[in-house]
Length: 471
Ligand code: GLC
Image (cartoon, rainbow, N blue to C red; front, top):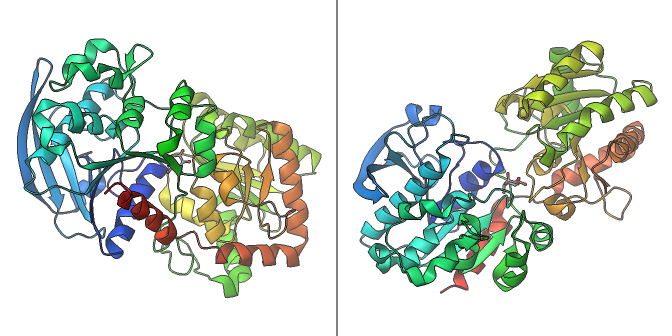
């Protein structure tokens, strides 16, 4: 079977978050299972682009409203990612360093999607499935079905995976002339509450919708930034499939980012060595349990609750633990996390920014990973943490609910709480502290977590089952 994935991100070409990790791993596993999986992304100006060799495979042109745009598709030459990676360039729109957050993102991503559809319509053969990810690619199924120029694509199977339903790419109807000529009887497919809503349009037009965990699928029918009714109505074609992780990249036994490799057998010793390095680097105390947070400093992740929860925990529990934060996001929060460094020396430290190497070192050296997310469609960090023997402390939501069992329950290994509140986080830190002091139990839990199969094999098989149901 041949599958074309379309996404704004793909690790290691371009990464802003978990979407990149998924699109960089799932196709590799699909290829290993004997299928042909390809990925196409915009040609972001990243290090990976400059460090690798590419060949031009197609050049084309299209009109987007009054603009005449030309595009180029290039392919990475060596297949080093385990699948063919294609990038689309459109001069003055996609030739930028960052992936998102430009004022003209609507134009950039609409143009990207038209270019991909146009290129696909020029292929001599057709893929079996076009698998689009998030709203940046969600207009493609509409164009394949209803734009006259792309008519030959209308029978190809389509799947939309929603990694984050909060972002929908909505634009005013004044932008409708950007789209290639389409069957105007179908305008309702584009519309949601008087705007063109790419995510909603994708849900309406694709054969199957998936989200990255079953619990998140349920949550979307109750809370989906305005699309709840749509998810209730389309429930029948929606399915939750939990993400896997790339166990070749995330393996404490071979990870070249960490100071000391380890496996289940020497987990205690291995974690201690990695913790020592972290504590030395950040002025923390190796004798105390280390709680870390890695992620975006935004409300979705409840990051604004952490400063208070951290100070409360240190104050009420007599400073018996350490904290280390790695992340970036809301500028006000970034400042707050930075300024706490001077008042909590020896108990707390933070690095503002995105640092893949430090993230690996933190999974390896920490005892606990905090994830108090308000919304977490799947969450990969808790899976990485578990693979490195670090206990996840998570809010009971989305993929966190589906992948972490509280250690108070039979067979449990993590810490789970219900509310995104300072109280629940502080109380969970207290539970972590107690677990930390019960060394035997902690070691057993570490070993249990490291044995859990979070690899892509199972999830990749579920996607194939889904594709097969389209034939
Ligand atoms: C988004 C979600 C995250 C998920 C990731 C990959 O970043 O917020 O929960 O794990 O996509 O699917």
